[in-house]
Structures are given as C-alpha cells and as structure tokens.
Image 1 (cartoon, one colour):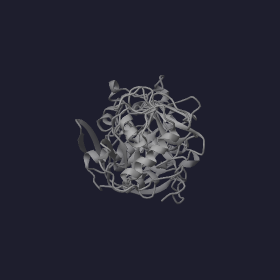
Image 2 (spheres, one colour):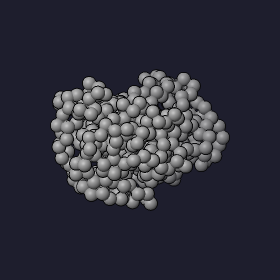
Image 3 (cartoon, rainbow, N blue to C red):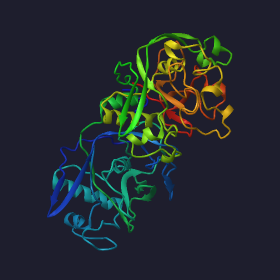
Image 4 (cartoon, one colour):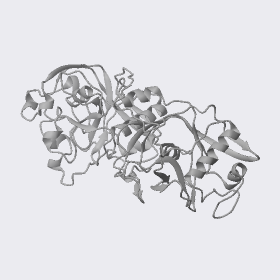
Length: 453
C-alpha cells in the first residue's frame, strides 16, 4: 500500500467483536446502527460546503477524504435513563428519562463508556469526529434538534490528504463538539447544557479493498474490456457511453500541438490503448443526483444538464464506487492516455488541435467565448469525430493517473492529471494534448469528471 499517501491521525481501527443490534442494560435498551466501510469527504455538509469553525476550532482549509472501516453507533444520543442505569445519577439540565443526558463533560463521557463496555462485554468508545460525520452522512444517525455532541478528537489542523479511520488523542487539548453544520473546540472538563454524546465501535469489517486500492493507487481500477455504445439507466437517468476502438497513437506534442505545447507535453510518445467506453458528456448534475444524496457546492438541481462541478478526484472515486454498487458495472475514470485518444477522435482522428475542430469556439466553452467564465450545459457545441462532447473546455476532467513526465516510470502520488481545460481557460489550455496537475483533494467551480468503462 502507498504509505506516502495513506495516513492516520492516531488510533486507527480496532476490532470490538460482534456488535449486536441492541443491548439490555438493567432494563434500558441501547440500540446500535451498523454502517459498512466506505469513503467520504470529511468536513463538508451534504452539499459539500465546508463546515465553518467556531469558538477556537482549527480552520478547515479543505475537505479531508477519509476511508472508514465498518462502524456501529448508537441510534440515539445516550439517554438520561441509560446514564442513570450505568452511572447512578442524573446531571442533566432538564430532567426526562428519554431526553439526551447533558451537562456532562468529555471526561464524564469517557467514564461512562468504560463502565458500559464492562457491563456488555464489548469495547465501546465516544465516536471519533470521522465516525460521527460518516454515520450522519450515511443516515445511520440524525442530528438531534438543539443538541451538540462530544467526539473523541482534539482540536487540530486538518491535512487535505487521504486518511484511514482518522483519530487524534486528547492529550489535555480542546476537544471537538459537533453538529451537522458546526464544530467547536471545548475543554474536555467543560459541562454545558445541550451537549451530549453517543457511543460507537468499529465492527472489524474493513472497507472494500478494491476501493482502497483505487484511492491509494495500489492498482488500476477494474476494467470490463467492453467496446459498445450504450445507454445505461440509473434511477431513471441515462448515462450515455461511446465505444472507442483501441489502437496506437502519438500522445503529447504532435506537430499541430507543438506551437502551443508546454514542456510537460514532450516528448511526443507512441502509446497504445485497449478498446473502452467513455462518457458522451461530462457527468451532469442530473447524473450525479441519480447516484448521490448530495450536490457539491455551486451546483443546482435546476441546472440538471450542466456538468457537476466542485468535484475532487476523491469525490469522483466515491461517486464511481456508488455508481458501480447501483449498476453492477465497472465504471471508472479514464486513464490519461484513454482521455487524449478519445479527445483526438480515436481511430477516426483528423488531427485537430481541439477535440473535433481547429477552432475552440466550434467545439467547446472556453474563456475566449465565455465572458461569464462559468460552465454551461453539455452538448451545446459540436461533437468530435467519435460523437463525444465538451472534451474542449466547459469543465476540467479528472483522469485516473498520477501526474508524471512522459517516458518516465509512473509514480503514485496525490497529484492527479486533469484534462480538457474549462469555461474559464484560455483556448490554448483546451487543446487535446494540454495537461494540468492538481492535488486530488482540490475542488473548484470548474472541476468536473467524465466516466469510462
């Protein structure tokens, strides 16, 4: 595994033994909801706006892509009657058996967890911030109105990198309290009204190793080795895929590109690609919504035929994983070579500078013909020789590959390849051989994605 890009901030996953759906503690029922392992962009709301920091919590400079192993978490915050059954007292500001216990410190919550774990014979914990947010985004828990909840993480700066089961030791530092939209840093000994907590555990069921291998770059995404134009229905929305017959082509600064080519497009390199399929358009808002339960910031359901934007490479992989789960297919991101081959028109190529023309304004939305510099609807311009749209401009498109020099052995990193240019780019950046590189966690109002199979 690529240790350089797979990091953890502390404890990592512990196997707690088999977790039951419910436990009886002296007549009080504790219900647990299980969430299978997966990946998500931590530190963002359902529309992928970043959670704002409050009251001294460290700034969240970017989404933190997280791989989570399977977890179980209490379906409700710890109630007053459960607290009494374990601790024998009730410190809550407003008394009521079924109300969440509050006015308890993080230290108090830790004492409760130790006693409860001993009673039921399973090692529980106050959930990490990642566990809490992952459960929320997967619908395993709901935000209790007016309640804030302790997590077992201390306040620290996030690194916009891939992390597995991230956690941080308290070490007497300020602890993070969460809601669905906020995070606060509070001393662990603080007792406040309307601050409660849940209990959680790792189930010992690891995240899908195939997904991990794609995110970490250990091996390429799985392929289907198909080559047919097809329309795939996903919850009532069509994903149109174009057949691309493989072959040899010269990638990079070919003669028609050379006048404008950067050094990273050189040397022009003879390349072979297998048969594959590629999206007729960039992934649209409608297509994204047919798979995911959120829209990234800057998108609108009312603009269903625009390319989805503010998508990081990791978010694109999350989308692909869920799409494959729904369809049973093996969607993936195109390799850089596949992308350029398709953009050039494959075996029907006429050697154009742009994808389908020597004039960018014929085939795509670029800064030269787009005063707003914002993305527009797909398929508004001419398709290329293969019938593929918007491979010149509109939205930058993530490729599967890490960025590297032509002719050198590939090195896995978090710097990924982007292609096509965008609605805000100069036309020279929208050429078929132009390359860009970007950290996999970055998002922008012109960053989108195109699928391959």
